[in-house]
Length: 451
Image (cartoon, rainbow, N blue to C red; front, side, top):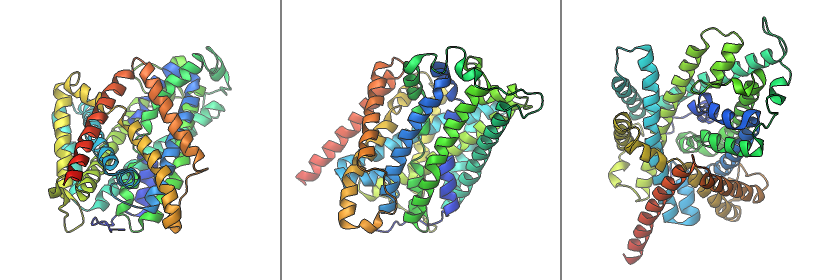
């Protein structure tokens, strides 16, 4: 196996915290309100279903990454399992998704900062954030690791504190509070006020919040012991992430009636306000701000490593392979941030037209990537067992049955998106983008065969 030319500057603590915090973002702190609105207390089941799917995908990806660490992660695995077209498609789709989503995160963080310091225009905040994280990613990879370690630590601390305060409120152990009991779980229409249809709609509303888990397997290639590091990070992350998400939702719908949630206001803020936490809105604003910057940093890192990996395999311009003395692919970082800047400008100037189409075109890309991960794992597991069984330091549970269960679940989500009016445009635009990339991959295959 070819060694990575990148540095090995990430430590185990960086990867562990990246695995824990990488998926805890604004989608949980803010976006969960939309899921509660359609599912009621049943949102707990929605998160359990979506989280279990994400956990299975992470375990599959962890198995392959521990056996064959690579900066391109699932793109490299897809190429080895299915052919160059699959690696090309997975890599470019994921890169495009990251640099588009990066614009949303930069703009969201700038909006919060502009609210704190109105004298500084929003575009200036965006410029500042982009420059700061570009510089951080152009220097030694340990700087990225340190940024993410402390960002993730703050997010994990916020979740744990919320769970503790919520549990105390539920049992009436806070000042001026009475035990809540199960009234809010069973009242106002019951646990499933909108039936199982509401739970299904809730899954669609929250499943994409689990995106970001993949970055830890990309980062593992730049640790001192990639195989062992990624195995440890995945083991420590999967169950804890599920606990954070499901536990948070259980606290939210138990402390307050699900109908008490207000559109546009984080459910976390509503709960903290109700139990008397002073300045709850500002506290959550800070947490969401950190979550957005953390995601911006991680996405810039992940996109640069993905396009670098594509260049390594002749799927992107070779000029991107230039690596600094410290082992940082600076041209790959600059290429990713350049497109990120373009995305930000489109988001600032045309959020409801050009950028909306771009955002829709990557809306369901995560599911396409997850599907490729599952299919790749089906193919590679048998090959690794025959050629190098000692590399299977982390194994997928109940293989191949749970892999097939995950594939079936993803197919079901695709079907649900097709029947859901709100989700259908994302699916159609994302399918179009995927077909375009597959067409380019097919043309490249034909040319390669002719040559």
